[in-house]
Length: 274
Image (cartoon, rainbow, N blue to C red; front, side, top):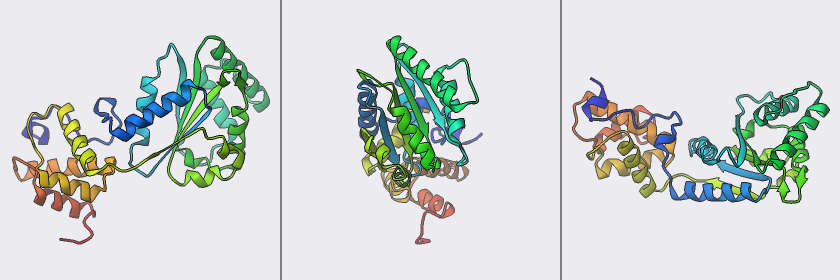
């Protein structure tokens, strides 16, 4: 037996792996999706989503990608996994994701193929959307200038490609490497930490999706989870997951404030040591 069976859960409710089934449509995420859809549908060109670590940028990106109907949008999501990325590598990734069939090592020819593919997408009545997660890792003036060049591709209805950048607050400094690109930002969205109410609703939502049919966390426990996590979804998940394990080990029917305090100390979230 593990805590799933003990608390009558069908699956782990607080995994930090992105799973669209557990998506919680908080007010700020709901507003962000509306803004993203507006920017793409009106072909604004460049949208930037900024948020601290763990505030749900990747979750939002995956959700937005799922909401883009394949009949209307040619969409792709790229995740930057290291900083040593060249503009040539980036163009090739764009080309592959957009469906360019004849790839070429020559950047000029590759750009020509990308342009032709974007034109084809437009003529088919679709909109091209390229989302890039962890964009702050592309700390390069050259790459920022390349993005600006791609945004110069236009049709009468607007930009031929829509970029949506998801990054940490330091991406603001990266954007400053190319002021003209920074001025091309049509929509900027800043994700903040959850409020106490959103934290409570988020926890209850994930428990419900996991099959919970009773109250597991006391009100005091929920309040402490918010305090220790500062409303950061990733930390909320970590605290709650550890709390359920702790509760199972000590055969507690409910997770109370003492359990949360114990977990907070173990995770070095309680700086007071009390």
